[in-house]
Image 1 (cartoon, rainbow, N blue to C red):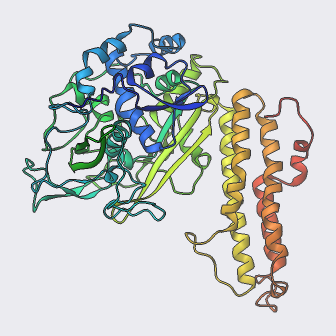
Image 2 (cartoon, rainbow, N blue to C red):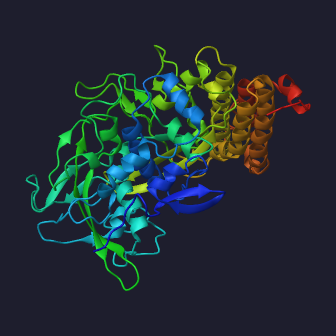
Amino acid sequence: MTSFDLVHEPWIPVIRDGHRTDVSLATAFADAAVIDGLAVDDPLEAVAVLRQVLLPVMLDALGAPRDDDEWAARWETGRFTDGDPISRYLGDHTARFDLFHPTQPFGQVAGLRTGKGETKPISLLIPRLAAGNNVPLFSARTEDDPPALSPARAVRALLAVQCWDTAAIKSGAADDNKVKAGKTTGNPTGPVGQLGVVIPIGLTLFQTLLLNTPILPAGLRQRDAPWWRREPPTGRWASRSAQGLLDLLTWQSRRVRLVLDHGDTAPTVSRVVLTAGDRLVPLPHDLEPHTAWRRVDKPKKEDPPVRPARHQPGRSAWRGLEALLATIPTSGERMTAPSLLTQLGRLRTDDYLADDIPLQVLTVGVSYGNQSAIIEDTMIDGVPLPVAALAGGDSAVRDTILAVVGQAEKLRLAANRLGDDLRAAEHGEKIPWDKGQRLGDTLVHSFTPYVHRLLAGLQRRPDLTEQAEDAWRAIARRLAFAIAEPALAGAGPGTFLGRDPDTPFGPRLATAEASFRRALNDALGRPEDTSTASRPTTGNP
């Protein structure tokens, strides 16, 4: 008989001493203070490991902190101590963490089969590989040539599919009374796929786990438990609400069974049975810690008043900082920051956290297509985030960051308008907003390293907001002209008079340039107003 004990076998990818390695569940907690963090070479799997295993194990073993003092006491220890409740917890539940246990395999349904007894390639669990309707453009494999995964890789794919799986038709389990013609329809995507995931990241794995720990004044709900402390699941499923935070984090949105191959050298997994799982109704705004929320104007009676704010493909994380900094509710605010960031802002306001902690925020999301039956894109980005910008009260750091983001958006629109004006002067048509490479998109992309530098500088020196904004304005103006000048210089000779020479203010080269310069001054102020940025300033971030 084959066993793969997740408590003691290495399977969690981490960065340690600057190198990627795999560690066991027990080692991840025992060495959390010296592990840099989770490896995110596959962001979907990294989020799944954090949400589906690490956080619920820690919370179920230690309980959720009930107030800021209790959270801060854990933070100050800097590590999980030897012989702590987590070690005892893993010892008590080791049997439920065996990937190939004969009657209660980890994350699976023992004996799960479809009515016809068929299995599917393991690539069904891995979005970047071809499977069914999901055919990535540059995949080197076909559905007929699935990989053979090691147990460590298979369990990570298993966790990821519970979070991010595509929607639509699924094979029906043999004991599922809702099956019709061997299939179940109307399956939603995995619950995490409906979010714009925001993960606060610390210097160590220990810090990251604490930064992702919600403070619950009433504690965990009485009936709340991760799935491994419940009865082993069957092929049947239900539509229901989450019973608490642990139930939400370990939500079983699919029923799965890994088919083990006993090879000549080591066991592998190349086939899988995957059927419908529990449907989360509705998305729990009061429990979900890892997404921002957007207020819905005039929602339908059956719809919730807020929806998760999802990440947009091709959009850098810093451009969405307005949502991440919405930690102080106001009557006119359309966005609400993730509850974990709101919590960090409160901890900073009450001096439980220092201004200069090097907080990073990881953003992960997926874009579905074809009625959510395929994954079209995976978005991953990270951004330094000054804790001072999250705190309550007047925050010069928050105001500076929001000003930078707002100015960058105005410059993007100005550059796009310049391109449209030049094309109009040449009798051309506007480029549709969702097609082609526009000047504004190129400009915003060039801003990214400088915005990251500004944010990291404000982490170290939150008192230098004026110098930071002056430096940004000077750089933004220079980058804007670096994009605009080649477009102006490359304009055809017909743009000098434009397509309507007799019209005084018709589209032509001069009016396009003048309009662009006015837009720059409106966004950044006149050039002389930012002249101080060219002078060296001690400690300039």
